[in-house]
Amino acid sequence: MFAALSTIEPPILDLTIARLLEGDKPWAEQRLPLVKERIRSRLGQLSRRLGDAEWLDGPFSAGDLMMVSVLQRLRMSGILAEYADLDAYVARGEARPAYQRAYAAQAAQALG
Image: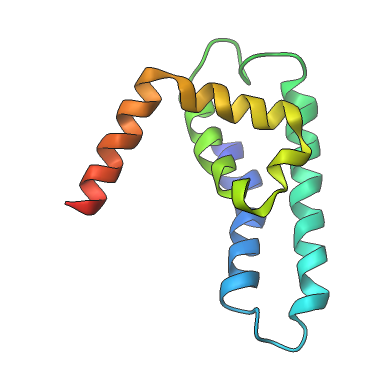
């Protein structure tokens, strides 16, 4: 859980900031490749950690739930698709019935 929030998520959030809040700045084009490289560096580390395992630390855990939620943010960027193992990991997490129920409950709460 800590790795998801303190190691993987910050550069992903930085990408969002770079695109949405800084995209009109004159230096934005130079910054974006650096942000994406930081993401790829972290994803490479995560991919090596996952290896051939189905989940990060044995059976599916809260850590996997958190990591899947963080990695989902990369879907639209296309960066996640560069790591087939991590893309499949996210798909496995999303396919879990408990994940689907939790996601639906969160969405209902946000809309309600």
